[in-house]
Length: 418
Image (cartoon, rainbow, N blue to C red):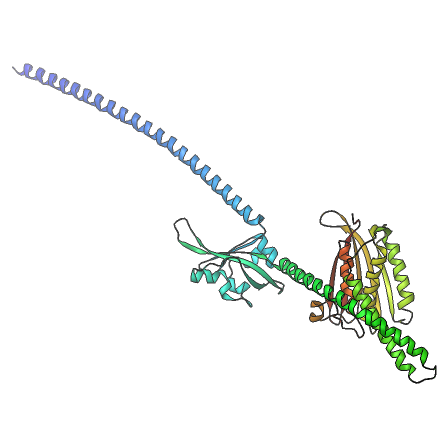
């Protein structure tokens, strides 16, 4: 009976082993299937990750491109742009801001706004005020000091700076230099004033000229009636001298109020200028040995189209002013050169420089005003006439003068009027 029992046990073991192997095979297939599924998911995840990385990379490229584009816009516009953080420190300062205010961006970035621009500035007209009060400024004006301590007028606007969620980041200010506009406004005011004065002067000149003629005529008759030894002759001569002075003033007034009509022709400007200087030296410097004229002409030929008679008056007026401003004598330097103007048109530049007494601020403010003069016996029409003639030649007059150090007058005009 024992052998039969053992045989049965072996069969049972084989059956159990077969069942175990079958189960193991099933488990192996499931693991293999799971592995394949995991491997597929891993590949899918890798693919998605690669796609996400590509999208992120493209997004960063677009962000950099947009950032560079915005930076290029900020650097290209002519208005200054300045931004401050919530702590009042400057974190943006574009190229136009550098040019207007004279500071380099490295000099101001990271510094407190008031530390850089606070001198003489009203706090109510700053981005700090906008930051603290949430009140923006739109198209207002203020005066600020540049790096060179020059005060300039600015037109400016301010606004708050926020992120996409509306969180406050700081404040931004945009501004531009109003100096040129202010000069134009002053020029317009001056032209209007001069036009009104011109009309009045023309009327007064005509009204005065008629009685002057009568006074001069009666004075001539009186002079003939009185004997040559009559002591009253000196009073008659005083009357005649006074009439002559008034008549010259009337003539100058009428000349000033007339519209400048040019008779332009081509001239060798250096020769024209040399002849004018020679005439002036013979006529005006014969009694002023302490005054001399230095010529500083460029070597190349300089032919231009001007009205020589009227332009001679310009040069002579300026030379007389220089001599009168040099009580102690000295050298008047006359320079002439040619250059290209902004529109590439040929331009002549004439400079007359003297080491005389110069002008104070009040005098410079009234330079071209008719009847304003600092000279005894002057009419105050010299520079006004100079400016009028030069502008008729489509030119410009610029005067630089320092009290006690002298004056430089620069006249620039196109070589060809037409």
